[in-house]
Length: 133
Length: 318
Image (cartoon, rainbow over all chains, first blue to last red; front, side, top):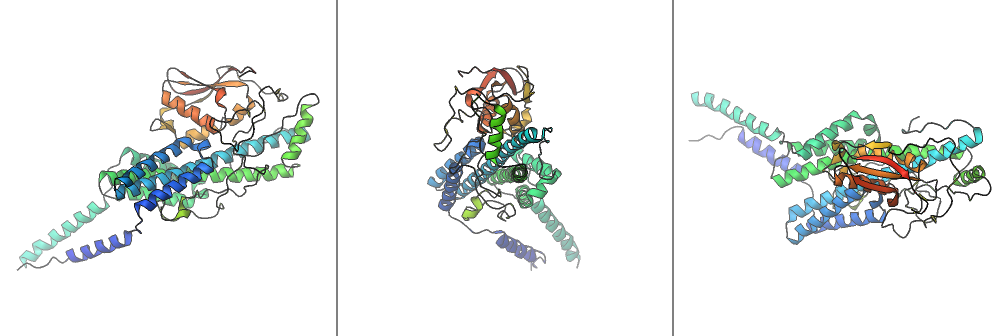
């Protein structure tokens, strides 16, 4: 007679529980690719190309690959590529924000330097790169 | 009883082996190694924890997931890619928020010194003097409206395609105020009209009308030392490029840091040289992306690392 191993059942139950907890809501590949397209459209409208063209190019390539995978009915691959496209677009948009903020900061710093020179005849204030000065 | 004595250690050993296999770290691909290295750099930078704590936590989760998930090669490549992306995203978010906060403080200081753009323009005109057309200072670059600085980013590790909000860039700026009623996406902070003449190629219709190239230059800035021709502004290492065609965030910021010098000496040619054509093109594209007109840039093949150098003076006809 074979006796059941005492530790196997708890391990199996724990594994099933963890798998259930780790599962995320499923989305359709079509929705995922559509979301990627919308993200790219938004980025184009915000002129993200001006500041983060290489990252946006990667995002577009990922989106194209996701679209192709969708047509080939490779659902999991399409979802993964769509997520990557969205992530790349998000990164490109953030880099564009940073570049714009840097350009703005430099413009205003130069204007402040000019005002201080003209009105007070003082040496220009040092460029501030951090928020706390 | 003897059989039980044999079975218990065997069961314990097999359980231990199973658990150790579950927690084993996935062998690192180059992408995952870059993500781990980048995460360490984020931990070493206190600004990231300050300005992007949620994004930093997401990056940690993504790297951990990529390291501890087992599956087919495609799945692992996807997780490694996402981990690297989240690490870059955390760094970029912290940088953008920090710059935006500094910009807002400087704007407040400018206001306290006697005005916004209008009064500065007036003062600039006074300095330029009579007989020379005034050079209006360009308005601030518009920063696109997004969420507020304190709003948390989506809690999920990966961007969730099912949630439209998650795809919006969470980086924030407190103000979207511009000085022109229409959007002004031109990124170039310029003093000389020639520099403002030609935005990057493929500019959209909403960009401001370029200044005529025959406009006389602005009054000379007092006591600015003109760098000699051939002055090297920036030298790139191989590690400054990702996959051979993208700049790392630090390298990109170094290019942004050239802006004041490039604006200050807007009549100078900018030469990009080096052995690698793809690197030269990447640097050129980055300079155009931050607003340097294409006609100021010259790429040329050369030996060694990619460099950005001041060339000769541009003629008025260029």
